[in-house]
Length: 242
Ligand code: ZN
Image (cartoon, helix red, strand yellow):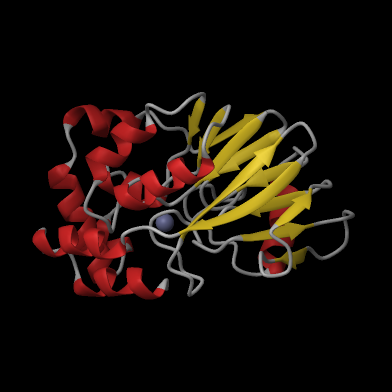
């Protein structure tokens, strides 16, 4: 049973297609939110995602902002520009799809959220201290998150200890042991100085988690962003992965 775990596509269809091709056949797909925001293809990404097998999808903060459920003032000026553009661009059917997304689901003993189990839409898990506290906010053995655009695992071998940080440079594949918070990284806008699209595959037969990176045609995405007058800073960051 192979589950493709993806997050933070951010309206980057070229990166999404590269990930889907690289991952090949999977049984399930979990998408941890932020389907839109930043990139030039919000409708195309939603339409592609909804075709995937056994899809479970979660609401992200950029999705909520595109639905006007979050004030755009909560975002920096460039992110705000991209959100306002996305609001204009989304078709009614795709807005309705985003509107239907839950903030949190439990599936197969795993909790799915965008940010953190404590604050599903907004909180960033960027350090072991915040992660340790968050182990108190879910009961399942594992929780998968996105939002930071950084592929990492926070591992808590015993309650009462501080979570340990595991990053893919040390190991690209690991067998999971309870409990852990797992982040597959970002498909459409990685921020770990590696511009390649990031994703993970969880295999339920032996509980292995494997990280993958895949190259995609970044200039093609940047060209579409320029055509739509999206912020130059967002265009530039795709090439460098920050
Ligand atoms: Zn995001």
